[in-house]
Length: 353
Image 1 (cartoon, rainbow, N blue to C red):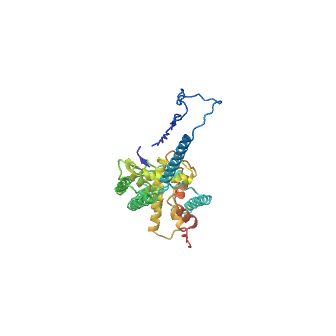
Image 2: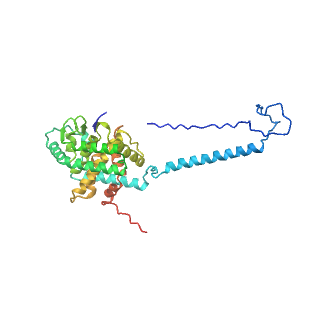
Image 3: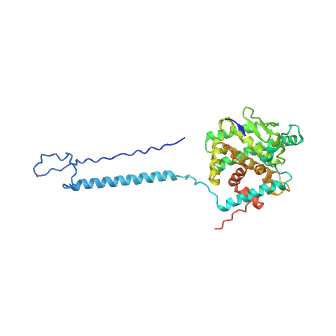
């Protein structure tokens, strides 16, 4: 949680082409007629007037020219749209992929119940009485968070850079400069502060960007390193964004893609929160690779998002519901979905020529 508070209109211009009825008339041996040929004549069904051969040729040529011009203009528009970088089509998920995501959610929430280090769901945390700062559970959680903070900072920096490459955002000097400043803000964070009043929340205050405030119930409800890395990373992304919306383009790209995949509206603050969760899941997955142990891979991956395995599944304008958060994260990370369901990364595709 972070405490901080173009439309294009296309004008089609159409030029009206007026063809004068007064066409040049060649000299004729016939006597002159007193009535001018350019005088307007009211249309009459009894006096059909046929055009002379020369005006017909001119009008035909004019029509051909207009047709060719319109064709060339349309081709120019088509080629300019295609270019060397065609616009990507919105991504969608197949029925099989959606079913796999639901199976992965079942794995996550089943592992939470079996795992001695499983996280407490958010709705259960909310039902707990307040926990003093100096309680054993809160102290253990605070010590774990402080110990993992340096690792989380490095993992967040690498995860943001990876997303920037994946979404092809690092193509301008201004964005790259924003990225450097964002990562510098992450590296400035020094302290985790336990707070009894924050209860089951974690938050950052941009007037104090060196500190992450953790509710004592939240500290106690995340007993694994993987879960703590995930939540630390979430808050670090808020700090990386800063008060100038430095990561706005990244939030928008992630939100748009997640919306296309899930059919859920994920814009503005929802997109920011989901991107923070995505970086948290990525950081936890990298942490798992860097610190192997004998725990099953699906169990360790599950720990990063188990606190979203709620019974009371409600969201708001700024946040997806907890279970929809898991759903969107898995839609964005098909390799992680496969690891959860099958216990190992998907086999590489072998192409035969």
